[in-house]
Amino acid sequence: GAGVSQSPSNKVTEKGKDVELRCDPISGHTALYWYRQRLGQGLEFLIYFQGNSAPDKSGLPSDRFSAERTGESVSTLTIQRTQQEDSAVYLCASSRAGSDSYNEQFFGPGTRLTVL
Amino acid sequence: AQSVAQPEDQVNVAEGNPLTVKCTYSVSGNPYLFWYVQYPNRGLQFLLKYITGDNLVKGSYGFEAEFNKSQTSFHLKKPSALVSDSALYFCAVRKTEGRRALTFGSGTRLQVQP
Image 1 (spheres, chains in turn green, brown):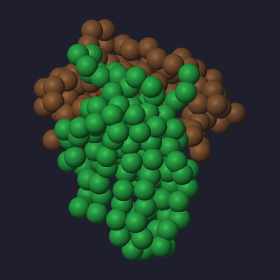
Image 2: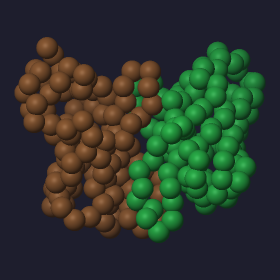
Image 3: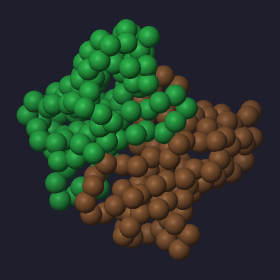
Image 4: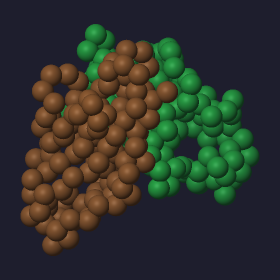
């Protein structure tokens, strides 16, 4: 079956511009996560959605970062007024949720963002 | 706060030899533990997880991991390494209650030499 997809795969932007990154989770997965992976580092959690609500936004690094999700499907991560330190690979993951909340997360291929 | 330590940036092993990739964690309460693998230009792939029960967990591609509560470790192992196992490996943890986001280690690059 189809996995998690993300678009674009690569994005190059100029400092100060806004960018939108898109994630299509696996159908039926109610939980959706955004992570950031800087070069040579592990993943940093950004935000978690259960359905279209976001009970955990604790990882968003600043108010320039926001995300939304439509129902139990597509999510968009928006970065306003991009800075060079925002350059990273942004990864989206989804999982089944509910009482068995230890389900593994399935990751998309990521969007590589480069801010010049 | 929860954290994961992968003390080795890189592990080198000869093909056919056993391999171990180390992971220790810190979390209040009981953990759920995961290993993921990242191949070049590909997303993270799930390998295995520890939820409860048997401390030895078997996963994909012949990998296994042993949960050791007293040492707060979850080392990844494979009896006989393949060149195709060369990749970046990440250990991750979350608490059994509360926050669902995973906390990842910084990754260990495994290089298997022919």
